[in-house]
Length: 154
Image (tube, one colour):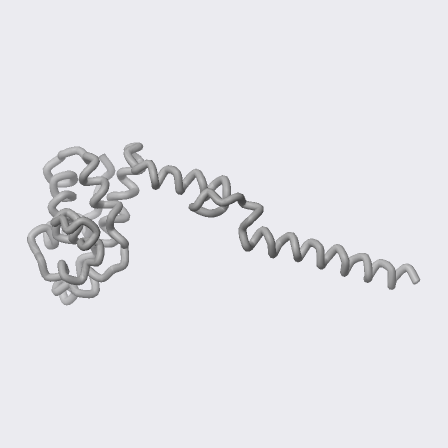
C-alpha cells in the first residue's frame, strides 16, 4: 500500500460524513450513486486507507468517475480551516490504483495510445494537426532553403 499524506487523511476524515458539496459535484449525475459524490469517495477511501480494505471494481470506477473539476473544493465549508482537497485525494488514489496494476482498461488503452499516437483516441499520429503543421513547415523550409541557396549561388 502506498503511504498516504496527512493532508489526504484529513480530507478523508472530513469528507466522509459531510454532504455540503454534494450538490456541486457533476459526477454524481452519471449513475446517481452515493459513491460518485465526494462524500461517497471519502467513505470508500476511508475503507481503503484507514480500514485496510482492498480496491474493488466498484471503488475503482467511482474514483475514475470523478471529473477532477474542483467543484467540491470550491463549495467546501472547511476552506477556512485550510481546506480539504478531494481532487488531490482522487489523484493520489488513481496513482495508487495504477501502481497496484488495477487501472481500468480504458485508462490503460489511453496511456498506450498517448505513447504510440500522441493522442488518447487511437488516431494515427500522421493525421494529427501537429503532424500536418510539421509536414507543412518542412515543405516550407525546404522551398525556402532552395530559394536561398539559388540566390547565394548566383
